[in-house]
Length: 211
Ligand SMILES: [Zn+2]
Image 1 (cartoon, protein in one colour):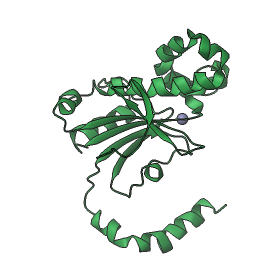
Image 2 (cartoon, rainbow, N blue to C red; image 1 turned 120 degrees about the vertical axis):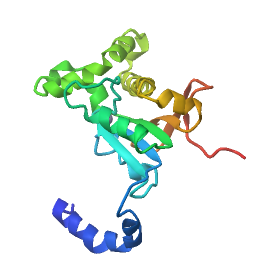
Image 3 (cartoon, helix red, strand yellow; image 1 turned 90 degrees about the vertical axis):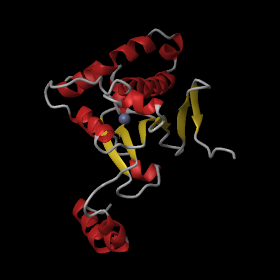
């Protein structure tokens, strides 16, 4: 494995040079078309799984790709401020909330002991308490832990999307069809990305639309 410094040197000497024109064009400003909200998990790489280049995605990552309810002025709101900026100032055309398989954040919800030494993570994940309660009522989720994770990850994405709609100005922009919202579930071991289909009311594998 290359060291992190070795990787940076390789970037300067090879990758940057190869894409010099692109970086030069991005010198003064950014104009990303998409706000990508994903998990901080190292296995989820937004630009890789969307085949996008620098300048295309405005990325917000946190533990378990959570969009917290909109509010003003409490503490220092990193996720909320980044989303607010992307919607209001950057005027992105798409928002993707991307959950993923085997999400440690979603899993930790069911193992409070694992969060004893990380009180801030515990507090952050308490945003998903309602989802946890919902899931724990299902017999299926009690018997099948893989199913429990799967359902938690997907419900979490939908809940985040719902919270997004309360961000200032977003609902109107959606109604005017100036922005589109996407709820994704990325499967690490297969590379598959499922998107929630509002008509079918379930997640379907992304595919090119037939003409
Ligand atoms: Zn995760």
